[in-house]
Image (tube, rainbow, N blue to C red; front, side, top):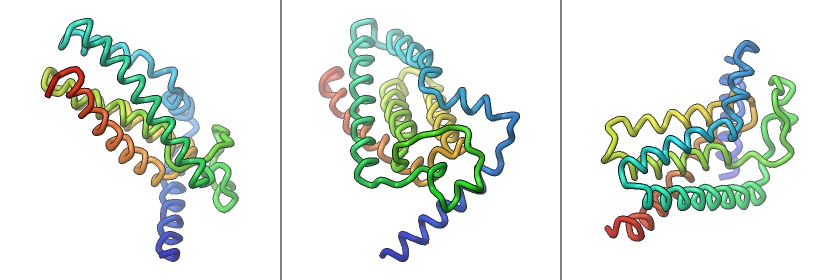
Length: 187
């Protein structure tokens, strides 16, 4: 089992090195902009507006508050996992950090990606709530895909960190979606 884990980690490192090597300095500023959570705040206003159009002000307000609670909960879960697993970020991993361009610096751990988990939690939750009302609700997933890829581009996370974050975000969103259905939509 340990050997399989080591093979998987080695493959993960090689995949990161390949994906990261596809970057060009010309694009660095764009990916640094995308990875900053503050730059995504307007998206949440769009989600609120879509909720308002579909459900009215009262439910949109409750959905917004609940979404913030869900996002905070997912971030807490991520930090518990990160501090338990304690996987070094690519930029701090001596076995590969000489082979990557270091564009950001972090001192915390890598597994699982908080950006990926929180953004996919919000995206899945928003998609499930809005899909009956908006034909193109699936476009919500552009946000977390770009957000997650920015983490690989910047070598802040390994691909497995991102994939695990997506899956964790799905699971968290699914659980809270069921709660929202019971509380706000009585289903």
